[in-house]
Image (tube, rainbow, N blue to C red; front, side, top):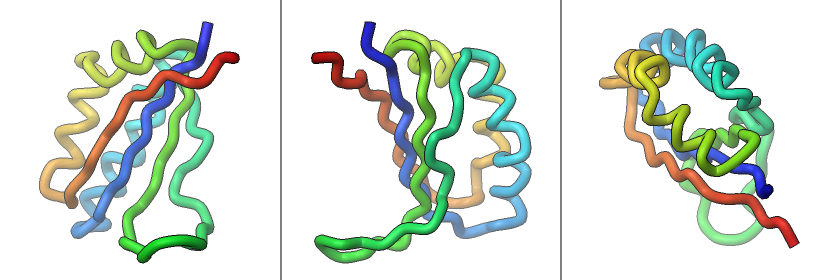
Length: 98
């Protein structure tokens, strides 16, 4: 079964408020056997124009688990802490399983 991924692109406008979200979002991800594999580490745009967005990728055992996590009460409670801290685009995608 292919894994599922949550990919987030975030423009942080209030770092203090966003830090509150960061402090609890990992627990929500972990509650669904997810783990961060990218969390805004060092990066370099090698093609195209840089957009300055924070990039986050979390891996889950399946596409369904990633969706279940995002839609869960525990994640939605964490998400409320992110409100007003910036703009975000979240995508759930199924991994490639040849």
